[in-house]
Image (cartoon, rainbow, N blue to C red; front, side, top):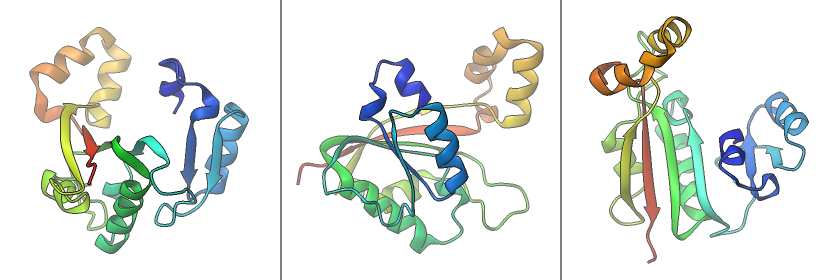
Length: 168
């Protein structure tokens, strides 16, 4: 959310929810103008079609149950205005040796967000490099981060998917 402020969004226009109260408290201390609350993303405390943009960051890959994923996706669709955007920033790869941490695939996105019914894919971009590689390059050769990202897409660990909420 700090990146939105850097881009010029007024902090009092930003709302956030996290299931962990301590994270919400840290956010409130850093950004007292933001509207942050602790809660379950399966039951968002906002009216229908409230937001122009709804975003998640590396959450879907950590959710172990399809029912939970679907409930959160349904809520994201519900609170996004028709024509509004849904930004998904999530892992391209599953966590090694973990059944509970699954990558967010294009098929999952289509299923969760009813593409092309309730939403349409507006774009997909490469995000951050896989953490060990990204940290290594950032410490030793920061100028090489984006060239590695462009030249070795297999090392990109995060996809950024932008959906547009349908009008109907």
